[in-house]
Image 1 (cartoon, rainbow, N blue to C red):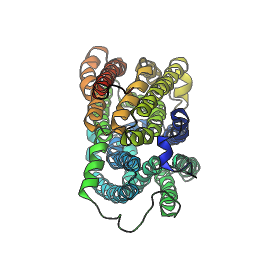
Image 2: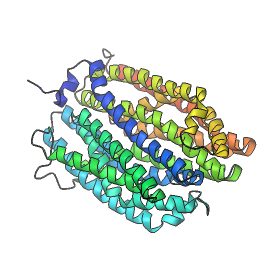
Image 3: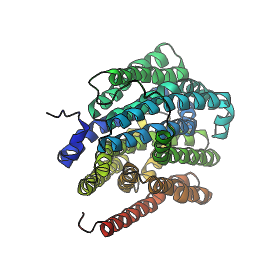
Image 4: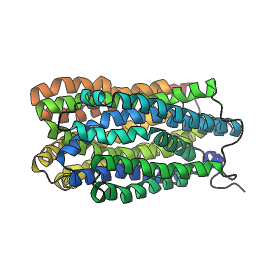
Length: 453
């Protein structure tokens, strides 16, 4: 009798039930991950000060680059593993596990070492001033030293979810959140280690999560697990992982570049506290986009398996449910930010000037937020079916093709508000592009298979 952890139920169980079963733990997991970042910001804002929030915002581009190299391996590996399982290739999925582990460790060591060596120069380029550089430096030193831990935990957690264990993947996030909630106030307030304590709390909590995941893949009853012969890098597997993972990699890399432009513009038109305001806005928006990302991660094994098994109707039904849920999530974010901007910003700071920047920016930035959920789901859908080029294109449209020109033009006219207005304007164009691409794909699919949905 098949277990609920047997990935082959992805091709037989009702799609709606599967989407709840896989997405809900992923959503909870991603929400907890985002709450971890929010908790860091809250403790930093109230325990260290307004300029520490700005220093944290300066670190965002580098944090995005950290995540870029992490998702290059983790997301790509999860997609390839689920497609292999859809093809009934259990051994192939196990080899993907070994390659994800090795590539994550190698990437973590190389990226962390190089970034540490040039850390001050990188942070100044990202917009740090004499007031904010010490805060950003203290935080990022610890984060970069911990990149091998972060890459192993996040990469293998994606694989755990994709191979039939969504609840365990959710528990990983719960474990790391609990660790951060306990450690952050002790290190920041109790030991008064400031930004160093905030970074250390993050890395130590991820280490606990990593141990949990490694234990899972060592167990005999895990559907895929650590075994002999999988610890060799294979060119074909690595190329497939990088090909699929290139989409989120480029998305995070472009996000890093865009945040640099945003920080530079905010520093010119509003100063360090305007950058801090963006740090608050970014944390709030990330909470809702992480929920959508959790939804998309839950969709990924369902879509990937059924695409590999060539069950087209189940693929399309999963996408439809995902779009409806994605729009609902970002619409909730829109309502919360438009109705309660003061309450939200007060969570992070009691500095009046910083709050004023953040409240205005928050209400402008989310004006077209309901559309973001749809655009994200469609982008992740193309990634899940192995259409890397389409996913990469859609990942780049909002940030490079639409947002960057707006950021270069509008602040010259409207100052800080021009920075905020650039975001909803680019959301509209990115949404229209994603919907147009999906319509083209479906028309093409119907021509190739006239009887399919």
